Length: 219
Figure 1 (cartoon, helix red, strand yellow):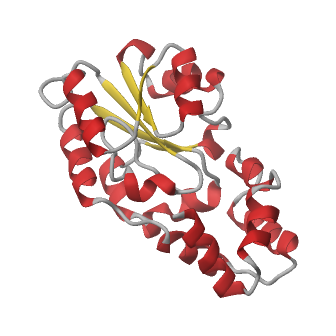
Figure 2 (cartoon, rainbow, N blue to C red):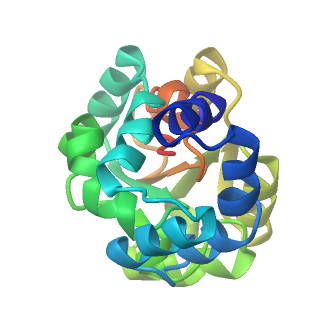
């Protein structure tokens, strides 16, 4: 719930949500952070500078945590899929969330373990077609045996342009139908499942939620 996150920040630091959105999320700063240009401490220093306010990491992360509501059904599905095939999570996010994920969303780290990757550490985002081949090579996976799932049409288009079989996530039922079609609820047509998340966290509640052969949203 990105809007909820902005409102929580507004209440906590006394700056209008629209101003926070403009200066942090629409200014290009957050995009740069997603690509690893700011470590966790540096990120908060720049947030404070851009907002001209004293903002601490605890307050910032608390607003993010409040915006994440796990869907227990989909988390269970992810656990089941993990017993059938390899799964990994790829999120467009920076180092601050990467380092705090275990505290904010421990369910994800319990399910995916070391197979959690952020664009900040990879140095590339899922919006770029050229990201996929090097990333899958890093995982030791192949394009032919990987299923990619996301709720963003642009990211799906980028993956498909790279030759990666993809599913556009629009809800749990459609997701399960796709799993059946790919025999992922019965066998293992795909050996690997790349789970991804949009950078603002909309999918953390809806998809991690829908993690498993697809996506887990992390804000």
